[in-house]
Image (cartoon, rainbow over all chains, first blue to last red; front, side, top):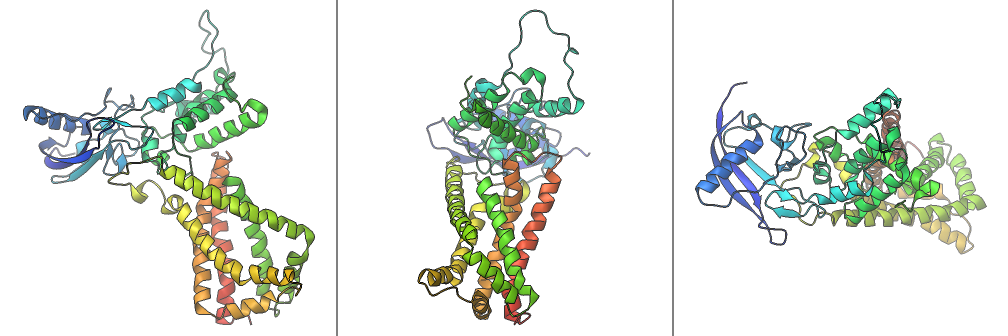
Length: 258
Length: 206
């Protein structure tokens, strides 16, 4: 692909902290390489702002190779930008043309309050994991990896669910700000394996209860989460979570917390 | 939402089957027999109470769900994904449901209401076939019915699949089948309903 440079107009959400009202600010960036990643373009903009003695834009990032789940920009109406199965750090500037205007917002959900600019607080996800996203193991020597036979199909489905990086794009994209795709991935990857069996029922109930407590919306099966998930987590996981939950409630584990 | 929705889907099936008797074009003989059974049978009349209870529950649940979900995002996005990531009808269930409800109010006030009123007053059943024939000569009523059926169809396209997904049945083995049957149901049933006023209006049935 041919290498080119471009000038862009950026409309970026600026917000001092959780309590102050935010607003859009417009910036011009020049001479952006088509081979840069979206975050590198933001690095260029921030260096420009620092040189001008202005406050740089706060944004989340860590690994920059699409697996950490930190980057979280809502770009022109799309979580992690327009590319399929891609995090913001893996979105490249060849997507854009010279003269384009790009609107960048933080994830918007009451359960993800803005900390600053484009950085949101996703600790609600951590508390959901703490509520049930673990397995009990015996202490002592590590068990031989092949001691537990697991069906191929279940292993594959579990692995696919475990690909969730907890970035929150599902919540950001959902018109209801529901976290069902995230919770369903976390419940599924353990529920499908024998290691996850002891806490299987209390896990589904406790994680759902915590999800509701955090103020996420209810799932109405719209499917925008699946369309925007950078890791391709399937809606089938939500069906599985519903089965797990219904099964747990009807078998008398509805109280959770066991 | 899901269970009440599935019950209402079952009702649509029965309602559609009974009313489709008019297409025999036998001057309403078979339709009158079916309507008489539905209007006087004790079991059916008892289930009717349940039907209204489920309908009201479905409406209340739906409106609460819509209001609560809207409140989960106080600051809206400046740019939204629109239909790039989801279908318009899956996002518009509350709107489509409201349109169906408005249609339903007109519909009940035309047939069910007067008929039950007459029965309660001790004047016996009304001749629903003749009422249909007369009502469906009026252009605006026919238009309202067609619009109601279109809204119902779109509501069902998402609602049918969605109820099974909520009950945990949307696995890869059944998902395609459920979606397929759902789309077929959402086209065929509202189409048969819409053909009834059209048939009377155009004179296919006299």
